[in-house]
Length: 135
Image (cartoon, rainbow, N blue to C red):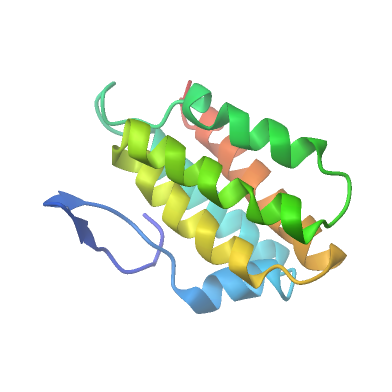
């Protein structure tokens, strides 16, 4: 589990990452923090019963739009927030956890380097999710 604080959302345990850790990843570009947090999150999102796990299809639309963005565009990036919110509202569960973490990270992106760091973080979460058995 990530070393973040646990929270409860409607009686369901969830997960979060301390804001300082997200800032290390997005703003400072700390690759060690990125790998640790992405690995822990990937493992968390892949764990549980079939119903509880995050599936890649649940976030594919967001991932595709993010990968198509070649450089920082504040408007396009901000439009990922409602896509994530829609996915979280539609699927609930661990998608909500991913949405909350991603939303915090998106709000920290202010330039091309931050964008590249965020993109690497999101892609790493999906990659580690797959590595830990997510589908």
